[in-house]
Image (tube, rainbow, N blue to C red; front, side, top):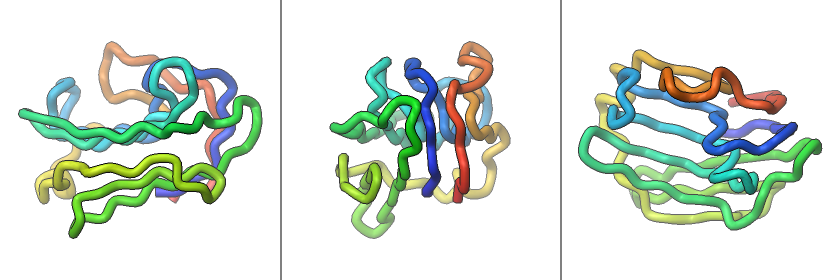
Length: 130
């Protein structure tokens, strides 16, 4: 996944994408958030009903500036990486993406949480999300 992102503020788990089986917090999910806490460090979460794994960037996005964000998942190695402006800022082992995630996701959002308890929308601009 790649995108240009311009965060206008940082808020806990502001979603870039939130793909889930349903609105249950523990459901199968792939979540990319622009901020872990309020510090602007992007994070990726992959999970299912019993467990989840995540990686968190060690570098923050620049506030009120355009940043190029890329997330790469290598299913053979079960590893993910986060890049900000072409520099690797996180790498870690991730749980495998189950085949059911690819087929049955029914709660899919860009720039918003799937959870009813989440913020209605992230305070960011996104461009060229791929």
